[in-house]
Image (cartoon, rainbow, N blue to C red; front, side, top):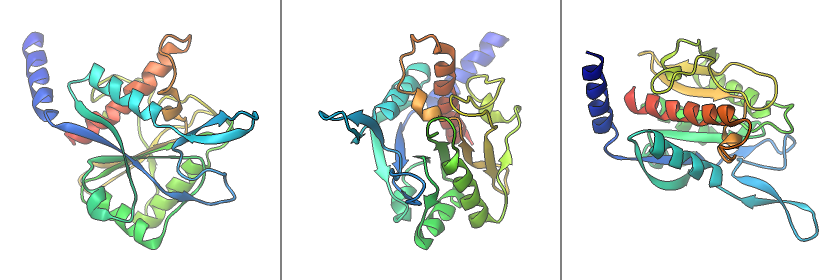
Length: 237
């Protein structure tokens, strides 16, 4: 009987994920006094004079897409698509978008309107805080405030039995936390109980660029698994 259910599950997931999944990163502004960065698209590097600089780098996103294809039947186009919140129709070309930053999001009224409309139309937003030196959760707090402004409701802690923690991999401890004090992930559901957005402050994205053979392999694997669960949830709900 278990074998029959497994065959049915594999058949259904193969059909559901037959098309290419496209990964989109949102380009947005943040409050200038919070950080020198805007949307977090780059890594710190040292130039020839040993001075800290920023270099555009999407390698972590690309590493995640490779793991997504390796561990599921989901196919991607392998690209990191950069989108803004100015164009709602362009935004709606993606089933989910990824926001990652270290400062308070600063959106125009048009961007706020489009972000809300995107989620109400069925879009999903994954917001991941880039912890600055392991002590801040500025983006996390700012994003929660933004969502409350848009929907008039507080984001709520997602319980450990929420399907996003079990829709593909079983993550019994909930959302992984790689930096800073552990805080549970929060989310907001629509009237049909579909999760429209999830936000966390554990810097999940940072771990996607690390070697899976490191001593912290299990934690790194959990970060990939959580990201994969989010994609699977979006494609099946």
